[in-house]
Length: 252
Image (tube, rainbow, N blue to C red; front, side):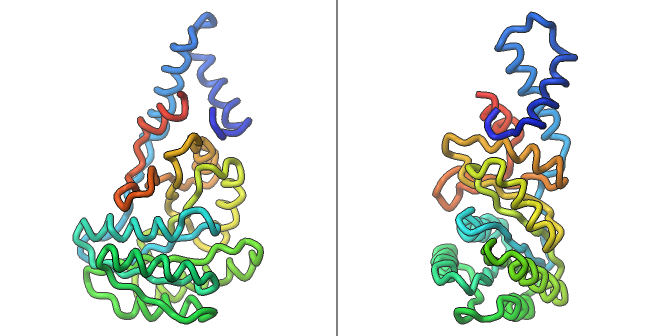
């Protein structure tokens, strides 16, 4: 069970023991495990709660290298295709490449972008962007992820949340997790949940050999569901989480 973790694996084994005969074959065990996972994962509402005819915002958080900025760009396409007027806010003002990367996504998808200068207060960029939204706008805020300055980062994210909320409802606060991070994802979820109430997870890089099993532990411990998964490099390769496909991949 890829990256699920000892505690969660033990829990699943105990539940399966009670429903399987002692002489169950490997195929029967795999099928029972898949059924259990699909049933468990399907019980959770995983839809993105974006209002169709009202302005709103999505705040993206996650460590550098998790695929956060790329996911913000892909979300821009996802919601533009649904008819939203998307605005990207480049609020990682400490990493030059982040703003440039988001600018490329904005140009590619034909959406607006709010940017500032290097080192500028990220909250001021978010506030300015939120102040100019139309009735059908969706603001997607890309943020910094420098864990080496943990407290500064948490304060910064909290401030962004506060100023955006003054202007528009925050529909989602999404934690971007790299599927290859394994058990480190638990500590990341704990850190970012201190800055703002997380509403969902985007699991990236699920197209490789890693199967992202740690999200089972993250979901259980923090009550935050996986809502979207990144399965490739293409602009359309960010998709709603599919419990059945995930369960089959995890047990292969």
